[in-house]
Image (tube, rainbow, N blue to C red; front, side, top):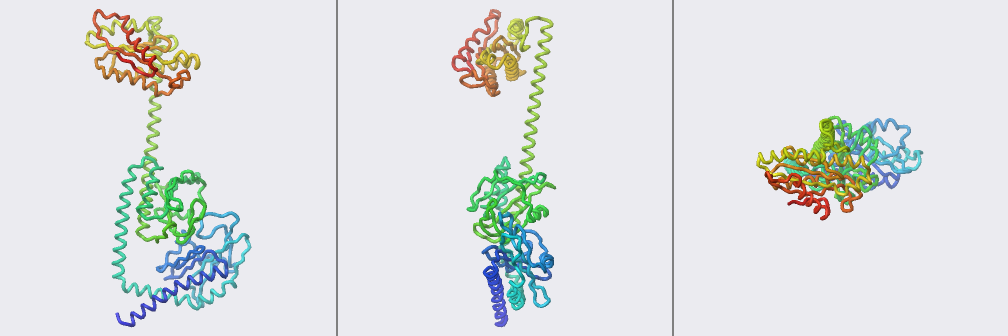
Length: 554
């Protein structure tokens, strides 16, 4: 490279720097002379309008490579049409600035889109916005005559010099591209590795609430997004609600109490219109709730399940002000897609669990109804054949039925060489329950307990269940396994306890409980049938004295 080329490049770089300073100087004069709060400069580049610089309140940003014009507001605006529309009126009033999200009470904004020209050639447009409390416009073309003169003299040269510098940079493109590609590749690999780690952590989430917390925590730490939040929505009711997010200091906070109607802004509409696209706003007000907490870039990615929008992921650079590069954009898009997919799966799993529980409940109800019908049928048939074999209130076999069945049971026990487990069971505080809740409730309680006892005994343990009187059951089972019988007895007591049936007469538990005594006896020709239950009843009495809701075994 000869000295002339070095000199050209040096001059171009100085002028490029001057373009930066020129924008900053013009913006500063607009603030001091005209009380402008927000400013954006758009330049025509190869027949495309691009964002060159912006200032929001007192924060100035210059974009050397120029950015798409929609990244100022987050959605496309036809600045040329807007300037032509208000050519004679010059300015207009609205409730929000172009880059704002929330309306402030008693605050309006006056806007003007000023064409920047050199003779007949249009160089671009300048957007200016100032706060006002009335709907009367105060800006006029005369207030910006100095700007037009300055633009006519300097802007085109500075833009050309800037593009010359860009061209000189392009001449060294191979070296720069290699360095840029290496940096981009390194960033992409780092982000992909971190996204893989985030996806693995997602497998530990069993609820949407825990999933969103993991996504926000790891998105902040692994993707270097200063603040992040995940919102869910219902497009039919137009409601939005928070999950987890970050406060102005970057701490992860629960935002599930945040619920309101979805804001009807162009930014939101753009995000919902463009599926699978990241919506970017540069140099804009940043909020925590509806309170502005700073200025920086803001991104939003809607999460779609087919044609249903389930929410969105948002982030910004409030704390450290780091720039938003392409690898980070792609990483955020992948994170949003991963969160969306996991939310859909969790919802499907929750719906399946609810449906399964409903089916279990229906099945249990049907089984209970079937048991009741069987009891009624049994009582009806036995009553027709033998009188006084069933309890009049519950239809359950009574003590007389037990005595009649004993010879056959003993015969079977001797034939199969099995022992008989005699079990005596009391519903604790039953007399008090009947007095307090009534005879009908007491009868229903006995039926429920009988159903539990039969279900716990199961079909593999042949035996006889009878209802004696006043909340007392007798149960005889054929089996030799002491451990299994102990487990069956304990399961009976636990199952009734976990029915959670209130019983205010039970001072210790305030619910219905059982006391149970059990003995295991070998049957011989000399076994006295009438005394088979006596030892079990004594053990049951011991269980009551020890505090109820327990099992006493021989």
